Image (cartoon, rainbow, N blue to C red; front, side, top):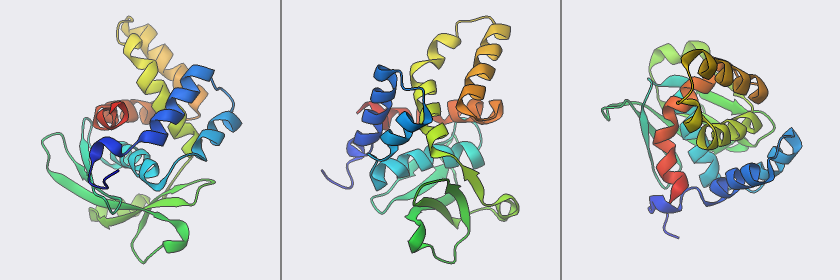
Length: 185
């Protein structure tokens, strides 16, 4: 597998999402066991999606580099932040943007707008994020066909089950196209 080959980024993450979907994994322990299978590259893809949804405009995208650096971009491709996924023990003096509870990984900002420093670090639960990725990938397409009130109700119910805010689930959904191609290769 070539480090530069983007089609090889999310093999374990895709497998984890498939396991959750096929086994109808509901418990946090079942989903957490899927996290144990993820490599640094999978964490980078998860963190790129999470970072974009947390700090970026709707419908943004990102570029991944072999050194696990993530360039966050708006929908027109203009870069607005550069972040890197690292193991906690490798932390440098750069600002920590996101800490993942119960994980050895975190996201550090390399080039970030000064306005973001006021809200950092965010503390996110990777179990909820992986469950949210599975929810967005496998369930939200059918929600689009529901009447607006029912669609909002289902998204709200999904957010509650994921232990995330409705706003966070909607932002993650907005950024899903940026990660989807990496998951389906």
